Length: 225
View 1 (tube, rainbow, N blue to C red):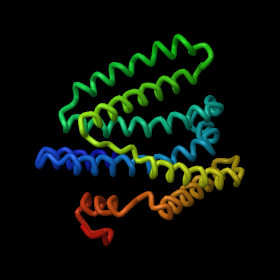
View 2 (view 1 turned 90 degrees about the horizontal axis):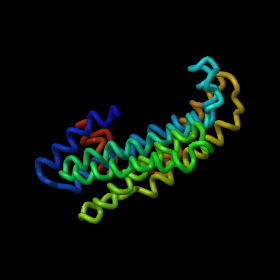
View 3 (view 1 turned 180 degrees about the vertical axis):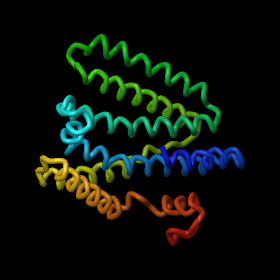
């Protein structure tokens, strides 16, 4: 959200100024990639040390909901995509389609409630949230593509990021931390390994580095424009 506040005005300004959808798309994809890249270590900590975190923040009341906690953080990745895609829809003036997708997504609630509320328990909330976001994002992307507005999902960098996170989580879990201090050390190890793998797998490409230079107004990386 911090990046969103900085880049959002630039995204819309670029498109309003020259009508260049390709430039708008580059900024939006850049924002989404970096947002998810920063979110993943938090999700990793929730997966590995969520019980310790919840034990601390809830005085032990919700320590057993570690998996729900982790799932909701992963859900934020879909929510981020929806927020950024909403800005793109607003810029290209397709908000009527966005409203339709949002209304259709509401249908997931009665369907899930009817077929699985009793069986799902607390997971009803998680499934409903995921279902809502998946439907909105899916409809929005399909309709954009049909209207000639290309929107890549970025399968390769998503897979690289998830692979980096999985290996980092395995390394952190091998420490078998059971105390807050141990979890803090494990979280640092997880974050360091994750960032190293993201760098080695080139999740951040030259195009992203160029946009970083442009967003801060300085030549932080030696990338040709």
